[in-house]
Length: 148
Image 1 (tube, one colour):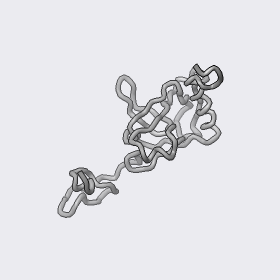
Image 2: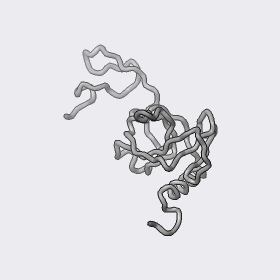
Image 3: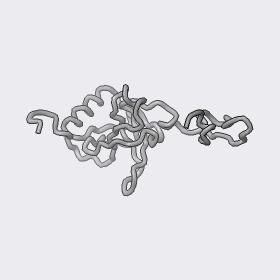
Image 4: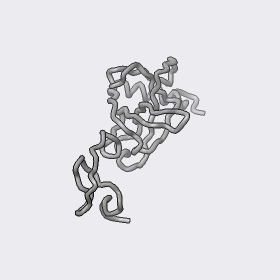
């Protein structure tokens, strides 16, 4: 199927008050910044609703920037307010847009639909992303020899 979203029966992209097609009286509501309408970047924290028994929680986008626009999925690390002090965690706080200190949990990395990222929370600075890299290597067993 080709054509515009409106021609395929879907909603057009755009802000509130934009008509779907000539003669179509439906109005399109303005949506909050979500991955479906905004660019996602590596190092950003977004809200994502995991299936039950989990819940909606913030996640850190880990996918390489050059691949984000090419893939329908992104690799993320969930954040949790349960801080264990493990080497596979990086603790972040209000400086990245969170309401309370949380741990980026690199033992629970997941690949999720990019369109499921719902609302932008904040961005992790470069120095903390280096710590995320080290924690991810540790979580996957690549922090040092032997690589078994």
